[in-house]
Length: 442
Ligand SMILES: [Cu+2]
Image (tube, rainbow, N blue to C red; front, side, top):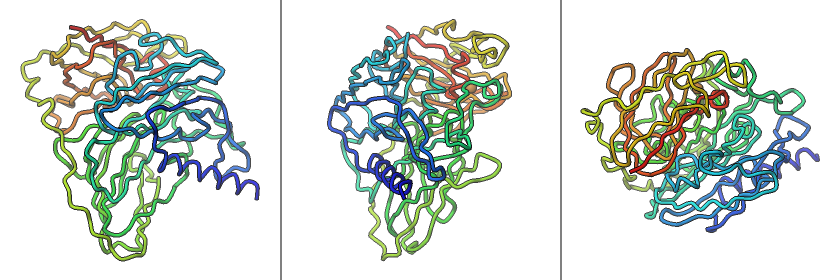
């Protein structure tokens, strides 16, 4: 009975954080050790969490405002917060040793976030990443458009996975040789907002905005909703697409986000739609969407915003390659296996210096047989080519999955001065050195 009570309690907390927490313009965010109840264990799992919640509170703020977060570190080790995808003042980017000093245990740091662009973002530490995120430190940050749109409802789904032992504890060895030699640490328990296969209720005829965020250390998701429900991608990595397209096959790698425009069929009352993952060989269920057995509501008729043609691919036609980054592993580094960018391990990487406003072409050349979702802080980019063939992507990104032996060419126009790190978002690879930086100046 006690377990059930705790479970219900946590369920309430999670749904409250995911659905109803609407922030004022200031927030205290405290990282500390705590416990979390997974449904299939009789014991509580020790975790690290923000404000006592798994996942951390969903922060909602409006475009055009400044949002202040007072971060308190109550962990036994240093930490910081990185605001993934936000293009903000470099000093607020949360990278220790680059944009700020690490926040020591017991100390605090104030992040002032100037929210210029609406979209789906998330936040997480940028210190000892592979352990701090895996133990539970992450949350969603939503910047709402100034002009609200008449969605019937909005669902926010933070996808994650956990590597749990039979005793209910998080597997305590991090950055193992196995993690490092492979595609990082993949868990055995996928979750959505900290829950296992949660159910979301919608009404027939509703038009629902679904925000999907991949907060896992290493797992790639390929979300699928089936053919019986219309799901179109309206935003990638926080920014509206320039042309809406069906969900189809979209690799949501660690760090990626997509926003979906989902129309529930008018005659769908009583049906259940499954959100499943199609990336792994064996498909598995992430969540279900249950349609209430009720008459249809009227479907709101509106067009979600599309991006103006921010960086046309042709802008890069005459641009020579600024830099090729070769991605590969070798013996070395503190962990015994180093993941290098041009054979160099962070922090011994070569900074790439580029000029504000000048188009740049950068090549990710994966010489390894592993996955590398490459993330650039503070800038969005377009994928121009994959393996020498033009890529057709009507959107920008801040993270791109570079497959085994694949070569991906990207184009970007830096808009914000500062030092922006670039790293693999498989956090074990990043911890093993796969990080470099871009310096943007006049
Ligand atoms: Cu990698």
